[in-house]
Each structure stands twice: as structure tokens, then as C-alpha cells.
Length: 261
Ligand SMILES: Nc1ncnc2c1ncn2[C@@H]1O[C@H](COP(=O)(O)OP(=O)(O)OP(=O)(O)O)[C@@H](O)[C@H]1O
Image (cartoon, rainbow, N blue to C red; front, side):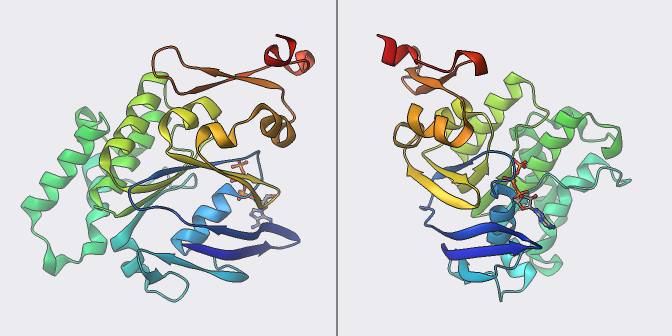
């Protein structure tokens, strides 16, 4: 889907020759330190950021030349820079997700049914009649995810969707994303959360793709230390068997417990 993409932003080469094939139905986690290019790559996949070089195809569509509505019919996005002061009810915000599908093809009853299903999926049904600006950060995040789900996308792009969420809603949100069966690219900071919920991980550093593979392949202690400058041990979750990234405090860098044993 992403083929040899570079993105120049002012003096910064934010994305440097990245190629990435997202498999249908997979949840691909996008990891990397602050400023490594995660949001830029998501915006480029969605087509709101033009690449300086390379191409992006979404479900067969060339996003650099496609109409916005054609992209939005296939792909929903949850970004970090959403407006927070729109004087709309929660229901109206979620119903915005239906707009790309065109008034002539939709019925009001079907739109309402989809909106209430999406709100139920994100545990936000009780907020339906609230004014959007009065919501807490975590409540807004869940409503905006409901809007994205209401769009009925084939591809979902999520930029740090667990921001503001308590642990219950972090787990519920990523669990719900996995259950959807929709192709998803999700930028995350929490390595253990990413390892638990993503089929594969892509690690960016300085705009370059430095690793791509299963959580076990990508989150090796050596690579985590090289990328984040934090020592860690890779443990196994006692209940799920998934990788658990135990970060060492910055002054307890080495040796790792694995090296010491
Ligand atoms: N409009 C801009 N002009 C110049 N540089 C920019 C612009 N937008 C972003 N950048 C730079 O591009 C790089 C990538 O930014 P991006 O927001 O994609 O990183 P990120 O991985 O999402 O970061 P974070 O984890 O902090 O959200 C950063 O160095 C950032 O400062």
C-alpha cells in the first residue's frame, strides 16, 4: 500500500523512503519515538499529506489522485488534531461518519442504527444526547472512534487512540478494533499494549522504517534500546502468552535481567 514514500516537511524529512504492505484484516501497530513520523505516515496514507516521492494505494485506490469522498468511503481516520469545540451533539458527531456514503444512497433509519451500534461498540451509548464539547478527553476519544466505525470503513487509521483513556477503555478499544476484522493501522506509544493487540508492528525511527514483523520479531531488547535508548526485558504475559515489555528505569540500564541470568 505504501511504496517508497518520502515526505518533506519544511527542513525535515519526516518520512524517508518507507515501503509498507498492510495485509487485509490485520491490525498493524505503528511504533517509534516522538517525532519519528507516525502521524505524518498516517496522514499520507489517508491522503491529507502529499508525499514528496512514492505512492500510496488504499484498497486499490491511488490516494494521491483520488477524490476525498472516494477515500473516505474506504477509510476512516481518528487523528490527534480533531476540533473540540464543535457545537454538535454526540449523535450528530457520530452521524458525520455517514456523509461520505452520500445522501441518495442512505436512509435516516439505517444511519441511526449504525450510529447506535457504533456508540455501543465504544461504550458511549449513554453519551448520545450530550453536547460534544462538554465531554472529557477519554469520552471524546470514544465518540470519535464511534464516528469512524459509523463510516463503515474497510481500512481504519488510528493515531494514538488510547490517549486519554483509562486502562479499561484502552483494553476495550483495542479489543474492539481487533474484533472488527477491518484492516487497521494504529499508532501507539505503549509497547506492551501494541504487542498485545497488533498482528504485526512497524517501528519507525527518524522517518525510516527500521523493523517490520511480529511483536516478538520487532520488540527485541536490542532494538528497543537502540530506538528508545531504554533498556528492557522481553517477558511473556502469564495469562495471554503475548510479549510483555518490561522497561528498565533510565539509571538501571544494564545489564538486563536476561543478560544477568
Ligand atoms: N508542518 C511541519 N513543518 C515542519 N516539520 C514538521 C511539520 N509537521 C511535523 N513536522 C516534523 O516532522 C517530524 C515527524 O512528525 P510526526 O508528527 O509525524 O511525528 P510522530 O511520530 O507522530 O510524533 P509523536 O509521537 O510526538 O506524536 C517531526 O520532526 C516534526 O517536528
